[in-house]
Image (tube, rainbow, N blue to C red; front, side):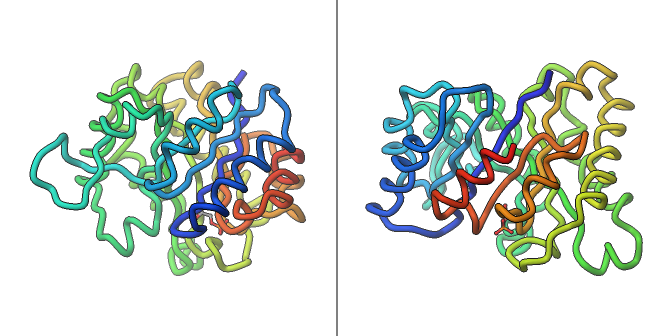
Length: 250
Ligand code: PGA
């Protein structure tokens, strides 16, 4: 009923040749089936990746960011419209690295959501608690606040463009993964929040991905949980063997 997705967030890694090779290897080693594979290279490789993946319905391209502005004198920014016009399908918004290192507030995230939606981009929206919040048992409230002040402000119609990624910050790039039970607990909670806000149907149709040190050795167990519909993969998406093995485990 809801989409199964494995998305690879390359962050600021790889050069032109290795990124091209990685896309081609992923295409070569996967089938055209009902699992959606999303590849998220740095801006500069997006257009080539879009072209390479054109012939595969289940391989889609995400930008890692977009501007909160429409267009104009914003040196260094890339607009949602620019992404959309080169054939990008998704944009990642709310990643903890953007919130933390680039001071992206909820207000900025909401402007980015508006830009993405008005330019027909789908969104992978990230949420997740840090270690202190986990240890103080505040994580339910943290997640609820993050969602209430961002994507839950969207209309029902616009919310259909959202895929949620639950990424506990303490698990990102650290090698520490949430246990499958810890992840399921939050995914179930997020789905129940969606149900309260938008109703049963939308809550059952919204894909919720897990992210944070997901790799071939733990993906099968994580993905076997009822409310986990796939993963947002960082480090392990940089090599085709690992990434494809994660896709196959889904
Ligand atoms: P990681 O990153 O898989 O390297 O932990 C996940 C992410 O930041 O999306």
